[in-house]
Length: 305
Image (cartoon, rainbow, N blue to C red):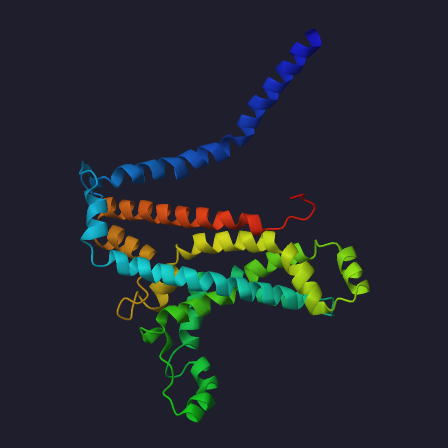
């Protein structure tokens, strides 16, 4: 009995110590996470210009945004277009790079580092770089494509200056950072038991068949993870549009987060901006939950289904 009580006391002490060691993170979560979220939820029901006292107005901010705001739905459409096109393209490029770099050749570490390098560069620096590369008049991309333009007898593409191509331009620029997902895919691929490939080779399977029947199915956990993270990150697109296009031309790259920024900074309308933030959270949550339903197609090695 005495031994049992001492064990109970030890567990209580460990529990208290656990909270002590976790307290910096818990305090940070409450001060910089939970409290601002609760504050923004309250402010979304108020009229607040960040100077005076918030005035409670109920659901007026939500009603105005959904039914009387000319920029709300276009900005949301721009964001959805970006998400539904950039996420699949990012998956394809990331997986393709991982398959190409999952080889044992001399200097492979250099190439892996080279493809991952853009992920450690500032987004601002990358945006300025691609602003120059996509420049319609003297940009390198149009100079490289000039023989094609001459062959097809067509004018050089306007890229980010063309309203019909501006969103696609920013999506193509975003593929430059596919090396981040590539590293995750590589880690998953190198965790696949070599015995599976050896057995497949004995059965006569070639490299393409091994990729389709072994590699890709066993990569589904990392593919699923990057798919979810791509959706969440896609709805937060802002910096590249702010620097490269300023939301133009003709507001074709005026994304939801950009509009939220203008509501808060340009219009000093914190109440409406907070309402937009919670609408964005709800949309992201719904799409993420729908994406999580695809978990049944994910194959976890060693799991019995």
